[in-house]
Length: 285
Image (cartoon, rainbow, N blue to C red; front, top):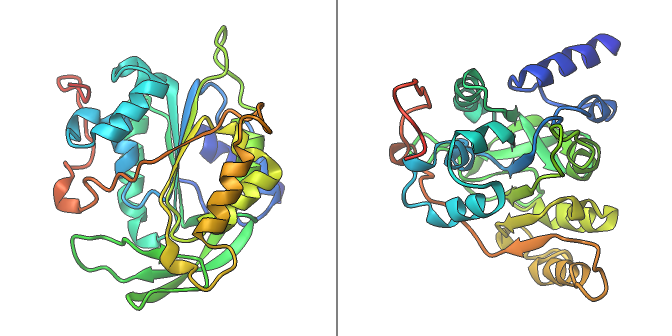
């Protein structure tokens, strides 16, 4: 057990692609992995990593104005300084997308940008494992639909066993407790939540634990098709969210929910090649 923890810590410090996290105690081992990050972007449901690329390579995505404006508002202007002080953590359970994320991360890390993808790992309310239902996408669409919810779509014809990570615990133990760079106050935390139905479990759990309040702004893609027959449906969860974030009854919680569903550049043909920046080229203009 000790050797597993040591190995995981070494991987986190190097910001290499993480192995699946299946042992609850390993969440504690991740404490410190966001130390030195002034700002944090949490890409919950990374797919091919496009949203993280919009953060670090904004000029490659001219049509993604809404999310670029959001990043600019919370993280600062699109320049090298922002990339150096903003860390990105992404999660993607579908193993078919692991190689692309690994290459993207390696390119960013070579430039000193702290981008970290947890592959073969789904976000949920517990640490352990789950069955991932996924599309066997053989087209330019990559894998739009992969979910650990019980309800599946007819196009989901593959299953994988993946690790699950308690998102609330990660927020509390890694993000909220991060050590800021010397002389700086706590920075901003922005989250995209696109987890194919698991949001109907995650959001109530973030409310119950108050871990939601670690986040400054969150944008959520709701997948009503997964929970039509469930008691935890869209109106119920949205009502819980609105009630919790009421500034009159809960003034200490700073979290804002923004209406943003950015699916731009989701297809492979719409994306530039994998990031292989040189000193002669800049991603900012």
